[in-house]
Amino acid sequence: MSRVVLVGLPGTGKTEVARLVGEVLHVACVDTDAVLEAKLPGGVADYLVNFGEAPFRQEELRVLGEALGTDVVLSTGGGIVETEAARGLLMSQFVVWLDASDEVLLPRLEKGNRPLLGQDKAHGLADLRTRRHDFYGLVSDAKIDCSADAQLVADEVLRLVSTRS
Image (cartoon, rainbow, N blue to C red; front, top):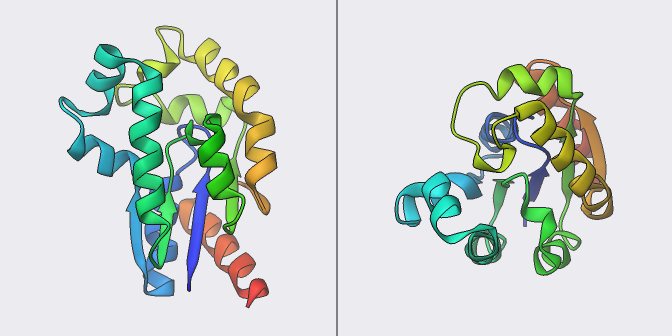
């Protein structure tokens, strides 16, 4: 079974890298945030505002479990590692952590509605990094600097995948 999971903070390019890796591996690419955006009433941002983070994480966990039953390159939401049950599922997968400095990520986050970052995106991103850093390290088999172009990052993910075969 061919399965690769990408984790990392918002703005790391997980969605684009997953798409590029999936094309080369000839497997489906699933973005948990995109699945949830289509599934949840009002989409992810509205759902988080109206129902809170805990119910959102439960929905995210269901989507993760379903996706891991198939050949897939999976782009996860940045906070998926905050749920203990999700970490348990991820630890049995090949997981690559995409990371870059806040200075690289902040300009990428200017577009889009990111309720968990709050009004001050720099402070919000720093807080998320502090909360999630150890969890990313716990579930990941490898860490890649995603400051470069998405294609170069995807090439590095594919190199890592090829060393596992």
